Length: 108
Image (cartoon, rainbow, N blue to C red; front, side, top):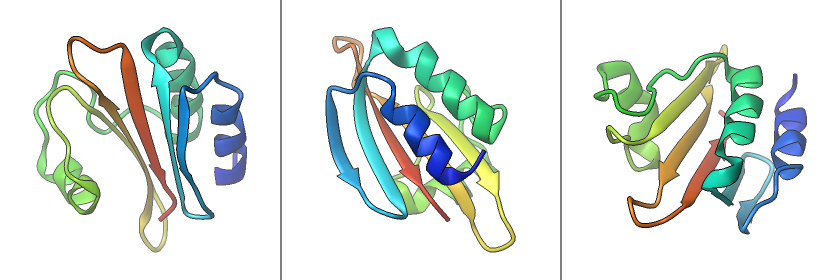
């Protein structure tokens, strides 16, 4: 799967909002009801999450996420290392009272 195919797969999932779409960056908001579909698409491209939800950030997860705002215990980080840099996906739930999740997808 290419990065372009990943973005195309994400676009098939109903989104509440497309916040940004560029060659190297894609950001959307999805409802929690579509979270599993989103995770399935991400897992197909990235493999297992480097930092799953509910785990403490590690040195690696901090290294990949710091320039995008960091990663917290309740967030998920996927990383696809490449020769120069890495593709990164960050899933940020809005909070306990919201049913939305922001996906930030960066092509490294």
